[in-house]
Length: 302
Length: 323
Image (tube, rainbow over all chains, first blue to last red; front, side, top):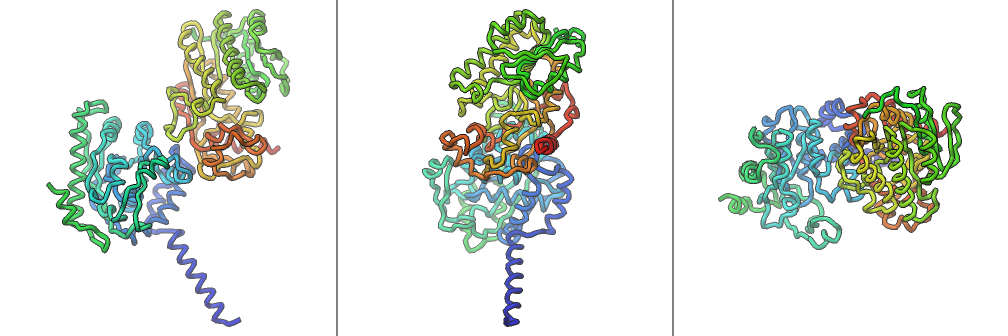
C-alpha cells in the first residue's frame, strides 16, 4: 500500500469531519454560554408546549452558521431589551419562516439574559407530519389565545407576526410593505399587562427575490399558499434585525376595550415597525440579488 | 350537604372487577373503617381477597340494582369503569345505549335512595386529540372526542349526562366527575396500559405528542380523597410533569413498530386487529396531545399529594410489568 494512500484517507476523514462539524457542530462557543444559563431555567425534557432544550440547542447550532456567515445578521436596539418577558411583534417576511429562526437566534445570542422566544405558529403547522413535532421541540407554539396567555404567565417571551400569512406570502411588488396588523396580539398583551417589543426584520424579503404564490396548490395541501421560486434555496441576503422601544400598554386599556381604542394602539406599533423598516432599508447592506432600495423606499415613504 | 366522615355507613363500588376499583375499595375501607363496603361487577371478580369487602357479581339491570339499593342504604357510590365495546361484543348502537341506560339507572337510584355522594370516573379521551388543542385543557373545554371517532360517543354522552344531572341535583347529592389522564400500573388493563407494554405496537415516527400518566396508586388515592375533600364539580386529574410518547415507550423498554401515523391513520379502520394492535381512535392520540389542566383539583389536593410524576409512574410500571 502506498504511504500517500494512507495520508489521503486521513485527509479525507478530516475533511468529512470538518464538513460534518460545519453542518452539525458539536459546540458553538457563542451559544454555549446562553445554553448554560437556559439549562438552569428550563427543566430537562419537554416543557408543556413541547420545547426540548436539547433539540433547540442542536437546531440552533446547525443554524448558527446560516445566521452568522450566510445571512450575516446584525442586531440593532439591543439596549431596548430588559430582563423581563415581552411580546415581540415583528414583520413577517421571506416566503418561508426563516425570519422567526433568525429572531430566535438573535434573542438567544445577542440579548442578555438570553431567552428562548416562542414563535406563535399558524394553525396548520402542528398538523404537518414531522414539521409539527420539530416546531414544538424547537420552541414553536400553536398560535392560540389560551396558549399565548399561559406562556406569558409562565414568564416566556412570545414572538408574534400580526400580519400572519399575508405578510410572509407577499407578491414581489409588495416586498417590505406591511400588511394590516390584526388586533388579537394587542388584546392578549393587554390581558397579560406585558410590554410589546416592536421589531423589524430587514433583508429577508430578498431570500427569494423572484417568487410566485401558488395558492391553488396550497389550498390542495391545506395550507394558505406555496411560494414557487427559481432559487430553490434562500439567497444570502444580509439581514438586519431592529429592535424598537418597548410599547407599554396604557393603564386605561384592557383586553376588552372597544375595537377603535385597540386599533389606535395597533396603528402606533404598526407605524413604529414601518419606520424601522424604512430606516433599516437606508442602512442595509445590499448584495447581488437585492432589489432596488430606492424603488422600495419610493413605495414605502409617503 | 357535605358528607361527614362519621356519617358514612355503607359504600358501593361499581366495577369492582377492575384493578383500579379494587385498589380504591381497599383505600376506602381504610378511610372509612366503620363502613360496609360492597363491590359489584357484571364480570367475574378475581384477584382480590378481602374479608371486610362484600363482593357481588350481577348484571347491571334496573331490577338487580334496585334490589341492591333496597337491601343496603348506601351513603357513598363510586362508579369506576364502563362497558367496553370489545367486551360486550355488541353493535356500537346497543353499546352506547347500554352504557347510557346503565348510568341513567344508577343516577335515578342514587336520587331515589338518597345517596349522599357520588364519584364517577370519566377519562381525558372525552376532550379528543386535535392539533388545535390548547396546552392544558380545562374542565370547561369542549368534549370533541366523538366528532371523529363514533366509538367514543358513549364516553362523551355519559360524561355529558352526568354533568347535567350533577348541576340539576346539586342540592340533593354531591356529585364528583373525575377526568383522569392515562392511568397506568400493574393492576390496570386499560388500552393505554396495554399499549405501553405491547411489543411491536405501532409508534409514530412523524409525531411525538406529550402525555400525562398517573399511577394507579395515586389515582385510587385521588378517588378516595374525592369522597371527602372535593365539592360537587368536574375535576381533571393529572400528576405534575408530562412526557413524550416516544420517551414513554423508551422507559417501558418495549420494541415499537415505527409507522408514519399520518398515512396509517387514513386506513386504520381497514386493518385487522392483529396488525394494528390498538383501536383506531388511539392512533389520533398518538398524533396530537390533550394535556389536562389540573388547577381545579390543586385547590383541594396539593401538588405534592401525587407520589409519582408521569416519568416515575412509567418507571414503576416498567419494573412491575416485567416481573
